[in-house]
Length: 120
Image 1: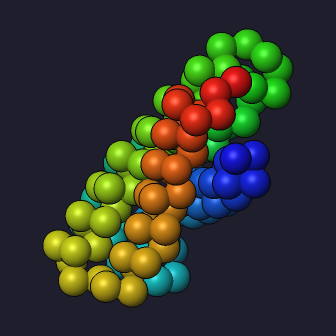
Image 2: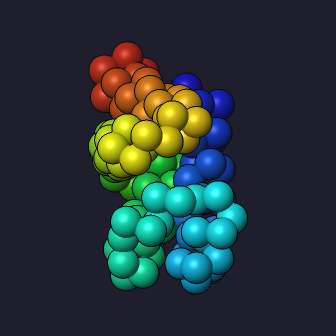
């Protein structure tokens, strides 16, 4: 469970940091075409949500305070990735579906695992 949680945290930490540090135009030219459908503020909010989710996955159980926040963060990240899947489907960006689906199902796995199977 920790391996899956760590992978999710690293993935969302990287994605969120990248989106937060780059302007919309640079994101659009680097292959993330979906940014064309959103305002710069919305893109930064998505990035902040990804960063918060990454931190929420690992920090609460590591410090032993409110560890229930970890599966909640995983569930929220799964919903974020559901939104990404829908955006990619709407834009017919089928290559973007695979990473979004993998991250969504991994986040669901962590959420269910930490809520029901291996809680803290």
